Image (tube, rainbow, N blue to C red; front, side, top):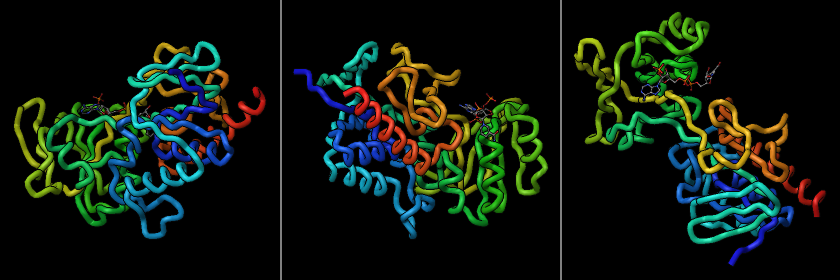
Length: 311
Ligand code: NAP
């Protein structure tokens, strides 16, 4: 049986959940299809200290849990399944999971983005125990400690420069001998007394899985094959992000050259009327829980206005 909804929200990180809170309070009875990876990147974060309202900080998963309960309280319905297909070619839109089928008058996309990882077993085992992909979120935990940043792009330079506020030493490890970063960012990092570079090197292991904390990065020089260990307590990945837009590839939704959904001006409107986007799936610049939440609010208000105009 095909069920009809006024509004379907796809994804349940801070953007989707904020959209759900606002839409539910506006009595749109939203269905939030949260997916099996519900919660997004906050589920991989330990302490969140910069989300306003939590003076003493809050765990990433706890923050998601509170937001989800808040959305439920006003009548958001949750479905813990992955969306398997969408059809936005005509209204009502069609949204399918592997088990169910829906039609919807409007859709908010908040599927987020994922940090790229090296794919090492040791890296995944130490995730949240010194391995992280967000300097803004976790930098302050490494006061007077040595850290490494992996990557040679602008993000790596920016994260390394940010980390100099806390860390005693920052080592940028890059796989080539030339940076991808813009000249100005690269030079800024090179000029900083706390930052040093290890080029032409790839990480082969994050140490130390047995101790359940990061103690060093084992690297291999790509020219000589020589292996060595850089002692560190923080291991920051900055090798790029990937927006979760695979599902929308053939829908006609416009994306930029990196695959992020395009929204119009300050709104959450995509190029398809009635389809809105919020959070990291359309923002590769700020990528914060609070900016994602703010854009989720925008999307719910845009959807509400759209629905009232098309009733
Ligand atoms: P990026 O420019 O794609 O750089 C990614 C870096 O990670 C590259 O140096 C790449 O190495 C390396 N890398 C990728 N996969 C790797 C792997 N598996 N193992 C080891 N290294 C790997 O990504 P980004 O730095 O996140 O920047 C994304 C965009 O945002 C860029 O357009 C950037 O200019 C922009 N941005 C701008 C600012 C700013 O202006 N303030 C700040 C941040 C980001 P290779 O070089 O060998 O490919």
